[in-house]
Image (cartoon, rainbow, N blue to C red; front, side, top):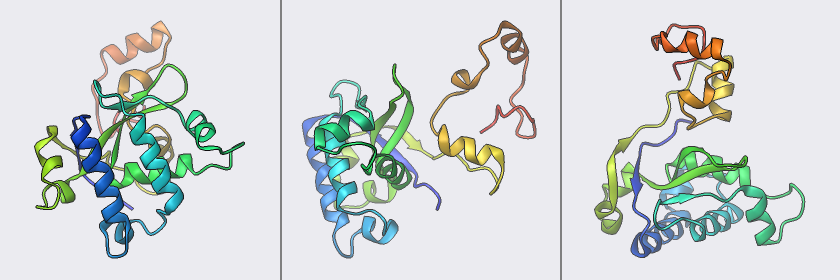
Length: 187
């Protein structure tokens, strides 16, 4: 399933309230989330609302990892829905990946799908849009190595994928990003 185009949002109190209202309204029967992602269940909804509590008001990003969030919610071990919930929220356009934190936690930004922002129902979200429409990464053809890497590393920049050796840095310095290149520089 393709990812939805999305708008990045401010992280004010009103926006957080509108985002949680969007989740609750569209999760119910006949809602957009219920139609678009039938695998999105109540555990995923709880996870999304818990992530919302950890949105940094200044940057609009979430810096907490799945393990810490799972422990806060009372899960033990790896039996939590964190990874699948984040993947589904990113696919729906409700979160936008911005990179990796200092640990292994993926940093995500609060966002909203374009189809809901443009509707009359969520005017607060429309007024809080930051920047232009962000399109998701274009996936590689099915079954290729690049597709597996793009699922695993969605949202990482070219600099974070570059080799750390000086020889590799010199090679990339003169390298032109080409969609037909074999080095994997083009997403």
